[in-house]
Structures are given as structure tokens and as C-alpha cells.
Image (cartoon, rainbow, N blue to C red; front, top):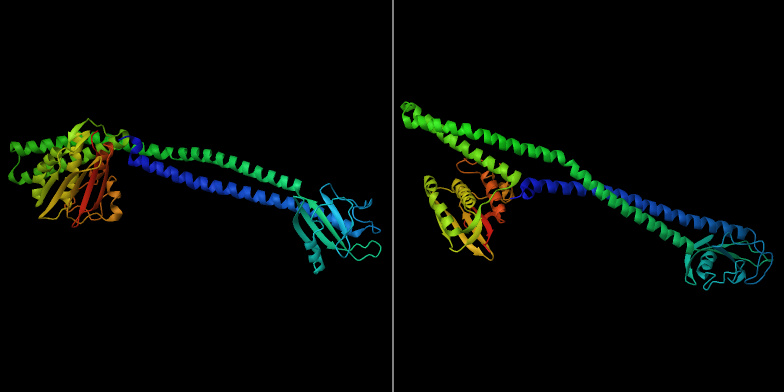
Length: 428
């Protein structure tokens, strides 16, 4: 199983993704917020400039109406627009044009709705209208009645063509700058999150090396302790009272040796993956033979093993590793099965896969623990009946299955208990 697919690598990738998501989310929120605020403030400033320019033009026009009635479109030298974008219309009490210094002559102007609002009592009326296909900002105001000029209202307008172009340009600039900022933030965040996990990765690698080195160093003294104790038992160098002590030493040395071997397997799996000597195998005989070999262990716990496996279930796999997988699952089942019960081992074809099941009728695995129990040193809350497990067996089983491109899960067994299900691809 390659290192990239190990539980540690999956955890690191998940951590990096979460760290990236949180960091980039915060930066993106800041960039979008600043961009939106800039766009809103800029558009508001453009609108305010338009209104200020229009108000100044209308105020100047209202303060100095034309001297006499000159008719629509008549030139007035002393009243002129503030700029090329602004214009002024002088209107009589009926709303007819008295003077049009700018010669604007736009269809739909003057705005009768604006006049109606002022006639209704409003001191001023602001509105945006469309005339001749152009957006125009209009300000309508009343002026003191003048018998000389006949002007009762002034209606000023600001053509928004340039204003709208500036607004679009501002929005485009903000959006472009925001997109560039988000891209830069994504790249920087990715680099930072990768570097942030480097010390963690180094610490994990150092831990793996320590476990592997310590396990290698422990194997020899453990083997010597067991061998010496066996020699003392076999050669009769102990008095009758010392025989039980020597037997305890042999048992505990054996258990410690298995634990050291499991630690080495876990360390090598996470560091470089399990090495497989793959060949075409028929799982039926392999599973039945492994079950037969573990019958004495099961009998010592007053448990039976019943194997029902189809023939012709061929897989490409490592025989020793698959035997190790079955031993782990059967040993786990024996440790949890109640006395006078049976462990069912099944093997069936499921589409393009083989499905192996090992069921016991013990306390089962709580749903909350069904994923965690495949992690090293993790045991279900129910625990083993004999409390002899190290918490490494199922992690090794998961590594073996993953190395064979399969999957393993645990579910509730029919009638109660736990059922471990291994899915392996059939041989091509």
C-alpha cells in the first residue's frame, strides 16, 4: 500500500484541505468585502458628483430665469449649461417649454411626472428617466412666479452616458482586481498550508522511524528471553516451583514478540507500504485451512468455527498476507465470541469481487466505533472478552486489504454481534 494512501497521509491531506479552506475562505471574504465596499463607495461617489453638478446647474438657472418669454429652443446667452452633460429647460405653469438654452430637444422631455410631484408640494423632485434611449438624471424645482419671463419651473438634466461608462469601468476594474487577488490568495494560501504541515510530517516520519528502530532492537532481546526460558523448562534446571514462572515468561515473551512484529508491520506499512508477493490464489482452500488451524484456539474458548466458502474464488494476492488477514479476523472473533457460540466464516462471489465475512455473536461494535477500530491502538468500547488484544490487528488487516485493492468494513451480524466483511477484486 503506497504511503499516499496510508491513514496518516489521508489525515494530512484532510488537514491541509481544511486549513486551506478556512484560510482561503477568510482571505476571500476579506478581498470580496473590500472589493464590494470599494465598488459601492465608488459608484456612490459618481452618483453624488452627478447630483452635485446637476443641483448647481439648476440652482444657478432658477436664480436667474430668462428676462422674457423667448419660446422653445431660443438661445439665452446668460444662461448656459454647466457642462456638455447638463442641460436646463425653463417651463411655464402649464409645463410648456419657455426656453431651451441647450437645444436638447429630447423626446419625452420635459418630464410631466416630475412636474406633477413639484405641483403636489415637493420642493424638488429627483428621478432618473429614459429619453431617446439615454439615461438622464432629472431635477425639477419651482421658481418664484415672474410675469416678465413666465417661468414657473426649472427642469435640469444630466445625461448619464459617460457616467454609466465610468460606472461599468469601475465595476470591471474592481472585479478584475478582485479575481486577481483571489487567485494570488489561493496560490499563497496553498503554499503556506503546505509549508505549515512540513513540521508535522517530519514529526510523524521521526515517530515512524523510532517505532521501526525500537521494534528491530526489541526483537532480539525478546527472542533471547523466550529461548532462555524455554531452555530452563526443557532442560529441567528449575525446581517445580519455578516451572510456572518460566511458563509465564515464555507466554509473555511470545505476546511481546507478537506486539513487536505488529509494530514493525504498522511502521513499514506507513513508511513504504506492504510488500506483496502476488500470485493467483483460490481463496476457498486458503480460508478453510486457516479456519482449521485456528480451531484449537477457538476450542480453548469454548467456541466453534464454521467455514462455508465457495470454490473458484480466485484472486491475485499474497498468500502469506491473506493468511495473516484471516488469522487476525478469526482471532478477533474468538476474543469477542461468548462461550458455546459459533463463528461463521463465509466466502461468496459478489459481481466482480469476492466477499469474505467473519461473524461472531459477541457484544458487537458500536456504530460510532465502526470506522475508528481500523486505526492503530484503537479498540471498540465493548472490548475483547479476554482483553488480550493490542489494538493493532485490525489496523494491519486494513492495510493488507488496501494493499490488495480491496475494502473492509464492520457491520451488525445477523442475530447480534459483529460481522467483518472483506471485499477483494476477482482475478482477471
